Image (spheres, rainbow, N blue to C red):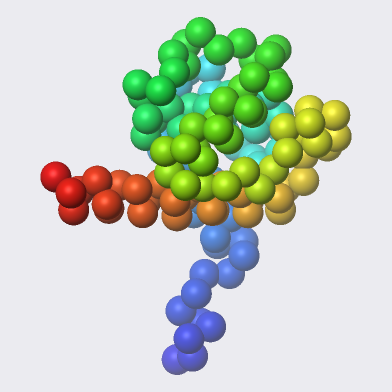
Length: 126
């Protein structure tokens, strides 16, 4: 068995990451994640993921899906400040352009690893 056969395929990685996003946001009624494009278009899915890990940073339920700029900026800022996940996406590009599935996937994968690292450090320090 080669090391490459131990790694999931891109499709499997997408499915696993999508499942993680769905699990993390399952208690957020206004967020339904089925894909890496349209379901992230208003920024609320990013905010829900961040809020799940950092619930004291902002009131998720006061966010407005029509205020995309605020939603993206908030999620990316808190992710950077609290989990050291640098914003690989630009909120202006996300608002005025089409969401690129691979770019969103890459950011979410980075976010996943950053949040898992944050959780591990939190456990070690407690």
